[in-house]
Image 1 (spheres, rainbow, N blue to C red):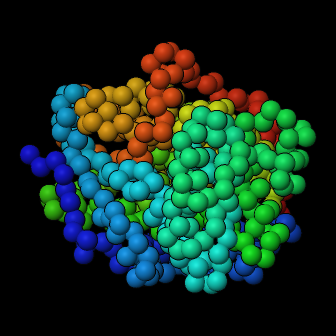
Image 2 (cartoon, rainbow, N blue to C red):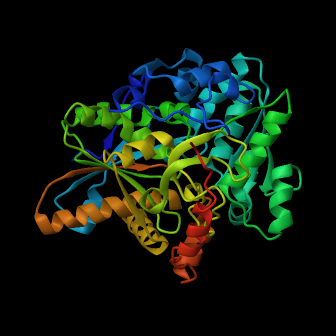
Length: 449
């Protein structure tokens, strides 16, 4: 039985896939404070021109620049595995595959876009970037990219993750980045949050506000985002494009694709290339998996909202819990975002992709089973996709179906062992969804039109 399905370096995709080309309706445009669509000029203060063009593009294929392709082949193509041992433990007739994005130097899928963004900024003469990070995977990836392309990096790390994951901070600093626990007293956005909530655990929305404020106020600094925006999801499609080639080598094709979803880059990266087939009539289920304590797609409103907590970004139409929403301090820090990618949100709103929300304890249970069968200890974010895939595989036990189930193992959990320790000690809990907080937060959505 074949376990590892490998590609050669020459098989690395030459182009990124843009899902906007195959969406039945054009993506909803970003809006300014006046409610009118914003053009490229509104983004030029914090992004290089090439990334703005990608953000607005509807072209199906966008060429990967040779220097970017040469940089990501440091670890790509990443391996695809058939999870034979997990299948046996579940007693399922399903065929389970996982794409292992943990093999990158930063241990996750995030460098796929970090290296691209760093290169485009370098080409326009930018040598300083500000960003945010939740679990630390994105901050680590941009720090690495900064080293490779000669760019200084400052990271605003969500405070609860800064405290839970000190070695992620160490990793960023090893690659030369400055790292600060957000909210800080270094920005107007941070000072405003601290004045109202001195003990704030932080959120990705707050950290984004701080990073955007710094980039917008300094001529020498641009902003880089690790998820949500169209160009970020575009860069991640190397994942799904590789998987399609790998499954063809074993004459298989997924019935279902599962991926964790916070901002959307993980899900978009593996699922969007398969959406092209779905748009052409292929019967395939694409499942975005989120935490039950931060259920943006499953319980959030589909509305225009700010991408940050303070309201510095353009308004984006997305599933949102409200830009003022601060989720509980669960250990899947990369999934604690109040909104979701406008592309992912629109596809879900139109019924073209599915979304499920899973409680924290179930995700760790799935992660432990996966590590004890397949040997890899997954990041808490990845455990969400594993839990969803396991649920489908168990359904196949009942129905007798031999489905092909694919999930994205987006990162390893080597810096998350404190969370596993708490799970084994019985100190982790499922968080009840704060309905009253959601109601209050959604009450402050910006009025458009």
